[in-house]
Length: 193
Image (tube, rainbow, N blue to C red):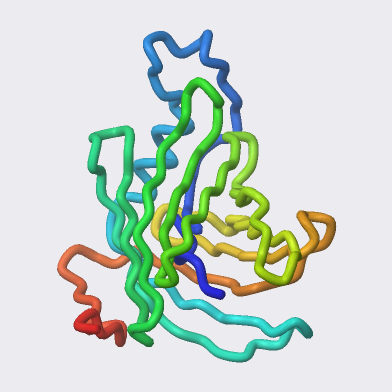
């Protein structure tokens, strides 16, 4: 099952790894690191995703476009995803919760499922809440962001079907910022579906 593409950028948050406490941030002010990570996500991104089977073999690859914009300046990002297959689209939001000292990402996927992921300033990892599946297993997803640069990064999505005891690779995303004026059609994405 595909989720909101890295989210955000799976989900990309960039910057230092210093942790701040709410007491250091008067009036709900964002820690500098949180502000930097939110700013980094703004814009349009080309996403190449490689999907893996349970044996770790690549079974398919596709391209998509992630577009992120502020809906509350400096606080709340809206995330929109469109892929080349026209099947999976998602919308989400990302913000930093000052009181709980963590990033929060929400996303509704093409199946209408709500995903909620959280992660702190000390790592570049977002983990979902456990979700009981119809077959009784408890599923979770985890996004780890690596090789983070100003205009690119990678996101590894892993799946757990036992409540986080064990993890297997689901997909890996290679994410590159598009230049101003780049059009989704130039990277093979049909947004008309």
